[in-house]
Amino acid sequence: MPPLPAPDYDPPTDPLDLLHVDDDLLAVVKPDRLLSVPGKGPALADCLIARLQAAYPDVLLVHRLDRDTSGVMIFARNAKAQRHLGLQFEKRHTKKRYVARVAGRMEGDGGRVDLPLIVDWPNRPRQRIDHDQGRAAQTDWQVIDRTEDETRVALTPITGRSHQLRVHMLSLGHPILGDTLYAEGAAQAHPRMMLHAELLELRHPTGGRWMRFQAPAPF
Image (cartoon, rainbow, N blue to C red; front, side):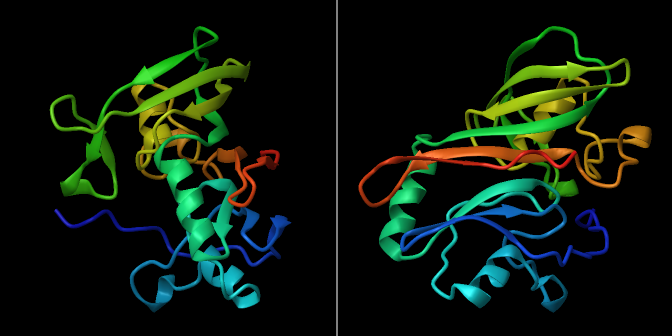
């Protein structure tokens, strides 16, 4: 089977919300529906890093968010800072928190999903759970609020696998609302994917001071 077709790419054009800029790093709120980095082909060239480089040509990639996920991202502004920040992500020294609206009323107030993930090659970019060949993946979840039809949860990824939060919520029977890959029917019929990276904490690459970048969810 060929890869799943992506919906038409029509990213927002609103001015970017910069949270912090200094000589070593830049923190910004990525809007939903905007790629973090260029996709394949000229139609997918518009992306967050390209927009940032128009004003800050030295910006370098450190991590990514899915196209349909909004929230806090940081970029390095020199190679030394990129290495320092990249190691913090690799060694899981950063602190991250997401907020999501998921389908259905979740029972219980919180827990941990510990299910290994692997790319679903016939249906890429989808990921799937695979206990034999999957890479370890853990997500902590905590209920913020709930109604009869949906639940708002705080999600803390312990690992950083592709689509981890999306697949782990699906595994609990509560897909993220608006998720075009993993939700179906009414759960998919939302104007955007209801997943937002609201908090990122890490050490500054020069001096090591602890920094906190935060942006409230727009939903």
